[in-house]
Image (cartoon, rainbow, N blue to C red; front, side, top):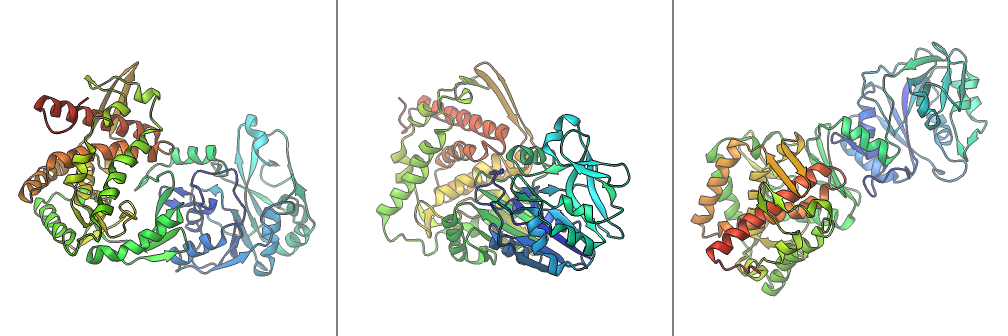
Length: 523
């Protein structure tokens, strides 16, 4: 027997991740197609029908599932009249002259199902009658009596096992167009004794709404996806996807600048790259002060080696963009919204976000900046300590402004600071709270003891190397405001939390400076 995955279609109803084929939509950092493959017997061949963004699927599977026997069939008609699952399946006929199971790539299976083919069967799931119009319906209890559209409480989930393949193919060759799409359903009329195989749940990722519902139910992500990029951790491989091709290109280019800290990466088409999963611990899960101090000193040496910029004016322009311009751009989505109209956070008066950032002396930040080699997102979740105590840096930025080589040392330290206060565990395990009543909000969050201790070490490190720790903290607060936009669609509650936290920290900081009559402008 063999397996067949139908993954040729456009998937126009789902735009959750721009540019990403629906086969690769992630559930808990594993793409849909891998969730399906992981249910299959490893000894059996898999036929994958591809069409739209075929290279994206092929490059991913060839890298992540190199241990599987997979054959790709390129479907010449994957959109428009006459396309559809029936047409795609028929194009695979030559390679499925044996019993086989076929699965549409937008059906998520969360149960342990044995995909054997000792007889003909069709996958069904019980549904509410009010949802009938969404599905193709089935009559029968143990065996298939008929397939129809209308009202009922038993739906076809798109999966089937074909034992009598010769008669199935003969029936499928007679086109059955429904809404101009070539369907599979009438092919079942050509085979007898089709058993009903019951699946407990019916999960369809075909629309934004249904996909987000599944993500909410299965929410144990190791890393949160952002609006236009995501990470896959799959079969001991890590793959990064970016909607923006240039961003991906620059990340690949920048890997060589991280020198001994980087991992060996492989480019997977124009939007993805991958690397082997690194066995070790995230810095956020390590309690040793010595390891953290050692990392800071090693990174300091790396940052200040061969770091002289060719053009100091260009460096300052990039600093202005990364701190000032970017902040003004990213807060626009929150301006004049209910979340920005909150006047008190934890009892402290806060102004609208535009008023807060207008009080910052950007020239002070830019003049204090230090040109160095850089990572760009130096938070504890992006620092891995291997079993041999080697340091690996992952998920680096693609550029600092428009420079691939030189960034600001304060940017890296402030990213580290912001990750010591709010780390990934808080976000993923939702160890934060927001309570809003009218124009007042209370926020709270869990802090890990080891990271609080690391923050003290970071403060000492800054004093030792004449780094202004106050500016590190200020920029750390700015980072919360900047990244809040990324999670506004995928994790709205977390987005609101870090936006409010950023406003609170900025207000506290500026209030303190005002009392001390510091060098920052206070209007």
